[in-house]
Length: 71
Image: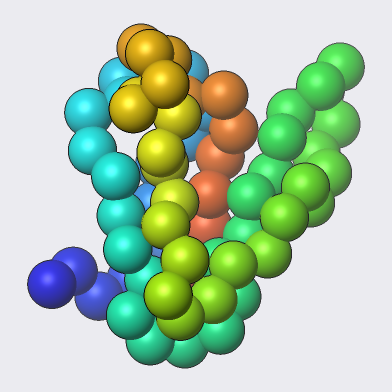
């Protein structure tokens, strides 16, 4: 199990899609998509959710950045 600190990056847009993560504790992982140098929250996740599953669909690179909203 990996523990992330608040505001720590889980993965960044453009990183290789080499894993999928399952959120066990704490509410609120934050997807932030970058477009035209702007940042937008496009989803919030919590316990029981998967994150980074794009690799299963054939995406070789991450399409968004995900950060922890809570430790």
